[in-house]
Amino acid sequence: MVAGETSGDLLAGLLLDGFKARWPALASSGIGGSQMAARGFDAWWPSEKLAVRGYVEVLRHYREIVGIREQLKQRLLAQRPDVFVGVDAPDFNLDLEAALKS
Image 1 (cartoon, rainbow, N blue to C red):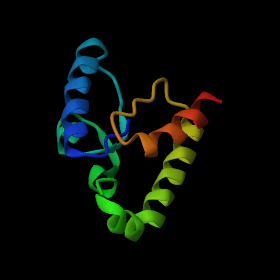
Image 2: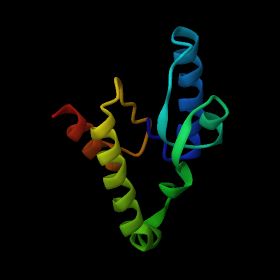
Image 3: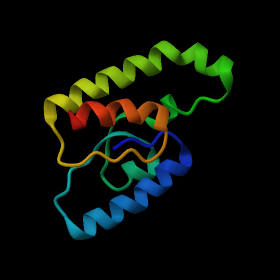
Image 4: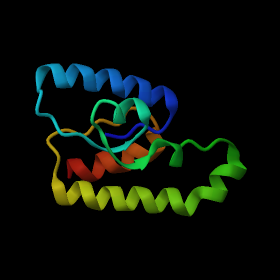
């Protein structure tokens, strides 16, 4: 699961509530914030790493963001999760989704 902004963290937290009600033993991990962590989410990276605004800030953090995406992709491909949920950050998630589908 990936939530890259505060609003995505809130939505993903609510989604995790629903998942946990249906599947109590659910294990979830990826990129998330405090709302997700409060529901047992294992944040490999905090969502703040993706929450950048404006061209200058994106360029300043570009290498780090690309590195995180590549590391996350490798982890997900190695673990083959049952489900991947990209809550927001489509520029970040679409590449991951394509890799997981193939």
